[in-house]
Length: 189
Image 1 (tube, rainbow, N blue to C red):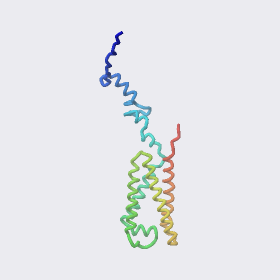
Image 2: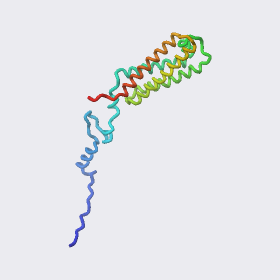
Image 3: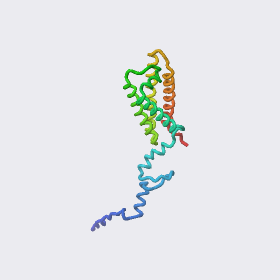
C-alpha cells in the first residue's frame, strides 16, 4: 500500500483577504466603538480603559479651590520676594527682620508650590491632583506648626500671626477634604 503524502500547505495571506482582515480587526477590537462612542486603537486600551473616564467625577468646587490656592500662594510669594520687610511686619507686628534672605527663600518655596498648583489645574488625572493637594496640605501644616511655635516663643499673639494660623488650619482642612474625596472609589450606579 502506497501512502500518499499530504498536499503542500497553502498559506493564507490575510493582508489580501478583506473579510479576514475585518474579522481580525473585530477580534482585536481595533477600530470598534464602545458604549461611550469612543473608538479604541487596540484591545489593550479597552481592557486598561481611559484615565479621562475616571477623572470626570471630581468633587464640586475642586477647580475653584485649586484656583484660589494657586492665587494665594502666588500673591504671598510675590510679597515675600519683593517686600520681605513688610510681609514680616504684617505677620509678627515687629520691625524689620535682620536678614531678608530667609523671607525671600520662603517666597521662592511658595512660588514653586504655586507653579505646581497652577499646572495641576490643567490636568484631568486624579493622581496628579491628589499629589498637589497633599503637597499643599503638608506645607500648610508645617507652616501652622512653625507659626504657632514662634508665637509661643515670643509670648505674644499678634493679629497677623493669628489670622495666618487660622487660615492655614482652614486651608489644611479643605485641601485634606478634597484629597480624601478624590481618593474615594466612585459608587456603582
